[in-house]
Length: 67
Image (cartoon, rainbow, N blue to C red):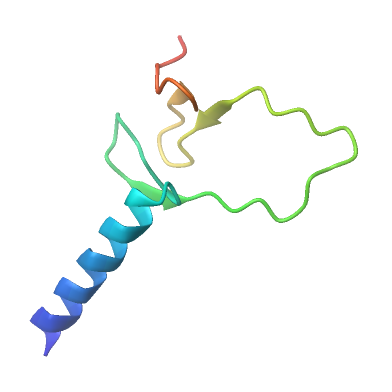
């Protein structure tokens, strides 16, 4: 039973990654989901993303690490 659940979770993760819903950190390997609840009135997306676990800063479009 637990093996079947693990396989099912792995399939859900693969599906979410294929739909770009999940980010995987290039540095620490943690997998996380970024959910934007509400855009502010002065919203300006520069396309920079950081890992909430290790702080690695990357560009969203190219995946390049920002130093």
